[in-house]
Amino acid sequence: MASKVSTAMLLLSVLMSIQLLAASAGNFYRDAVITWGEGRGKIQEGGRGLALTLDKLSGSGFQSKNEYLFGRFDMQLKLVPGNSAGTVTTFFLSSQGEGHDEINFEFLGNVSGQPYTIHTNVYTQGKGNKEQQFHLWFDPTAAFHTYTIVWNPHRIVFLVDNSPIRVYNNHESIGIPFPKSQAMRVYCSLWNADEWATQGGRVKTDWTLAPFTAYYRNINIDGCAVLSGTSSCKSSNSANNAKPWQTHELDGKGRNRLRWVQSRHMVYNYCADSKRFPQGFSAECKSSRF
Image 1 (cartoon, rainbow, N blue to C red):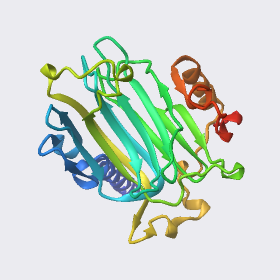
Image 2: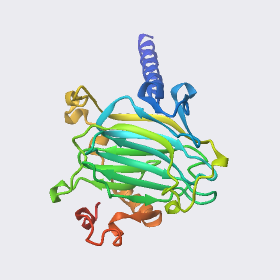
Image 3: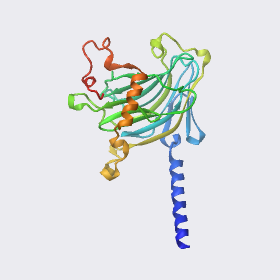
Image 4: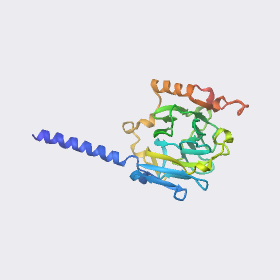
């Protein structure tokens, strides 16, 4: 009898732990702060969701309360539906200052019936020019989908619904700077960029359709928070305590999925734009794993 009671108590303890973890995951009240928009950003669903709105006067945005040096950053988004031309919805990591580092997803709106463009870029010490763009294999306005940035000292991986769409490796060995020394916050925003965002700026925002709204849900940050200059991972940096994102790399299935996405859904690659870079491509472009 004592054994049954002990087992039941153990199961109850496990269930309570799972419930506590679920309750602590994905909470905008705890992890984020709305930083601009004069009320156009609103936390919803008890902290589980957040809506950003854009009208002719202003967009809106929020950022993470903490900054991080490496981690896995997941965000679910449902983008502006219908004619979203001129609008840009973002989810990115960035440090501050003139020589900032940045890792970004930007979702460029389009006219009704035309696909969104996912714009990705990596900045190191204030320099970017590492753009790759994609069209998605689903309608990102019809439901929530998960967009992920994995950032560790070896590589940066961009994922959509856990499918890798881009890998940017550390190529410091051939003289290419890599973002690894500046802590970054998570930033998200909805703003107007109709001078360039949709079909090179040829299609402008139709303000009769405003306000435009994008929805965020289930923010999930598993990273090394930097507080007073000290990383939270310093005290748990042993191999036994390593988290999957710290050594994340693609297995065979992931490499196959990456090839499928890039062969069928990539619409721009800086490593193939000879008109933009007539002097020659960046050194990492010569690698088969850029």
